[in-house]
Image 1 (cartoon, rainbow, N blue to C red):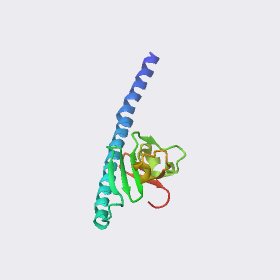
Image 2: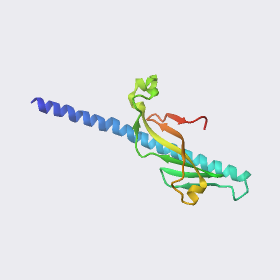
Image 3: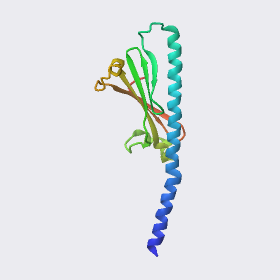
Image 4: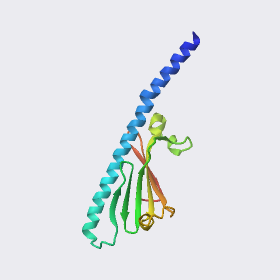
Length: 156
């Protein structure tokens, strides 16, 4: 009889995890896609504004949309690559954000979708030199409340 009770408790825990944690992660994934769409819209608007002022066709100003999870923003001699990671992550225990009241009050706030932003030389992509170095210049973490944290070197 004890095994049946434990089995039921385990099943209840699995159901609870699926109802709450799995659904929360899906919400975060949806929010993250919305933020990625906002970035894409802002880049398109920025390109349109810049093209009004910069008439020289040799100056790169374009977007290469690769679908829901990636786009390239060509600007001058650089290309900024925006990539939305497909998975949702929990911050590592050693991350200083766990010391904040916001995460202490609700551990679920420590799960995030991530948008990575890389900088490459545009020539590398145009000439298909995919082994050329690029740099991660920022990461945007989006949680279940559509709150975010930006991690990067200096002001972006």
